[in-house]
Length: 201
Image (cartoon, rainbow, N blue to C red; front, side, top):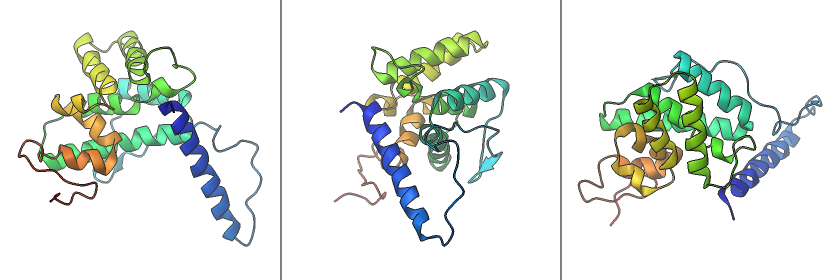
């Protein structure tokens, strides 16, 4: 199964679960003209979440708008959480991170899965290519857009874990606790941990 199909299926399961949970309320919710799966999130993000400042520079704001317009809500929300998990992992690891580049790479890391940017290449490369074109068209320097390209292209690969923080933390954030716990320096010290962060025997 392609990852794009898997993510759509997971979104449908999550939507079905939230609809089923509404049955416990005494009054049914008012009918909506838009399906939650089809309505794109709009508006600014919060300024700070879990002690992490959401980057709101001009280029980051433009990247957020692109992700909001191209992505279904569940995919955009995953992208926003990816930044938070990645930034928290970097903070816990004491890493020096360019948060603007990390944010842009995270918020755009799955645009290769969207109808707007899907293509013949693997979704990571498709998204990285689309992000680079967008960022350079909006004036981001080529060396910075190259870091974003690597973060997106490598986020689903173990290779990214061995790159600079802005690249490695995209994968750590996308994987949430599982990949993040592996990133916290344990690999360099020869220790492995499970998804809960507990040292493996």
